[in-house]
Image 1 (cartoon, rainbow, N blue to C red):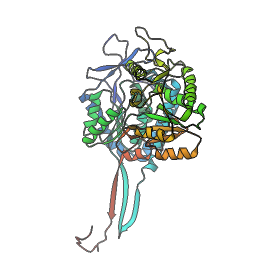
Image 2 (cartoon, rainbow, N blue to C red):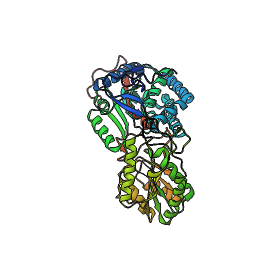
Image 3 (cartoon, rainbow, N blue to C red):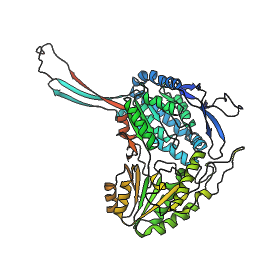
Amino acid sequence: MTSTLRTPAAAGDGTVPTLHHWAGGAPLEGTSGRFSDVTDPATGAVTARLPLAADDEAATVVAAAQAAFPGWRDTSLSRRTQVLFAFRELLNARAGELAELITAEHGKVTSDAAGEVARGQEVVEFACGMPHLLKGSATENASTGVDVHSVRQPLGVTGIISPFNFPAMVPMWFFPIAIAAGNTVVLKPSEKVPSAALWIAELWREAGLPDGVFNVLHGDRTAVDHLLTSPDVASISFVGSTPIARYVYETATAHGKRVQALGGAKNHMVVLPDADLDLAADQAVNAGFGSAGERCMAVSALVAVGDIADTLVDKIAERARGLRTGDGRRSCDMGPLVTAAARDRVTGYIDAGEAEGATVVVDGRTATYDAAPAPDTDGGFFVGPTLLDHVRTDQTVYTDEIFGPVLSVLRVDTYEQAVELVNANPYGNGTALFTNDGGAARRFQNEVEVGMIGINVPVPVPMAYYSFGGWKNSLFGDTHAHGTEGVHFFTRAKVVTTRWLDPSHGGLDLSRL
């Protein structure tokens, strides 16, 4: 694949390339004159400039998707599936390239980036079964000589607004299903990690997807607002923070769009006294510090029940201190945060937690890192694994979504107190229970008010044929991502009632319904 990801810089010293939008199967140069920097979070170096679309540029990208929709809608399911399978095979063969791009712009270690691509590929494979998933239903002779059947048809142009933390997986929750169902797509990736979207666009072109079916729009709020308000965009799929998810939902629905907006999280891991504490400690470290805690399903609050807290905290601390933090390309355990602002935000929360009375057991503010800064930079955006104990529910390290490698331990006396604590939280994305008691596990999964639950599984992300989504302030709209709910989101039902009359139909009868 000959990459057209980057073109020579239009300004500056000529050493930093400039990215582009993607519309109608080809690069579209930015014309707004507004740019943002793309950085390597492990070194602090600026690696590219990203055009931020003006309203007219956004309209051009949407128009390309709109123009492609009739042809793609009318393309046979067999042909659509062939393109999906071709994309799947190309992605399998080149997944390593995409993982390297993710590490270079997000910072997560390469093995974690490869895992992200693999989880996204599961949705591509699910979408390859779209002929079966789009089957309607039929009733013969519903009334005398009358047949009824239903079909599901695509919506049109679908907008996807994705976050920085999963630049491949989160878009792949949506666009394989949208495309397989006959829609066209405009993907607005995060300004922090834009290259994965362009790489995917080129892969779609090589797979044989018609021009204009998959498009990429870069930008900030101007681009987002255009997608939310454009009469040519039929639906919006969003993943991000709760305040923005609420804004996206309210704005887009007010403009008549179908919306699925996934918001923030505060994921709890409840450990009962009978649990295997070594297993629990291993999994708390994996789920709390993987991808530097920049996961919407990361465990950020560990609830220790009964008298196990001291032992469990010691085990977690021992493991956390052994993690190697540094450049994700250097076989480290944990990489940097995505930007300097993210780093400063996380260390600010640690400062606040300490000031509010939490015990800092492992301090990521003082960790050392295996990474070398680029010339003329202050280095990468690192915070080491941080473990806070004796955290209370009124402290900001608990009430706020930190989105960094900070694990807070809360102590309660009973199972009932643990469930009450989880259910009182305004978020309801994911939660986990660690126990060897099957009765307690069954009771927990019934009583806890959270959308995704793990039993001895710390990050309960469902397989692609189930849906992904939380409850409460973690979801705006009533439709989760991927699975059969995704198929229903990207299609709408049509019911056809048919009667073929013979010449002796009997004339007029105004009483017939």
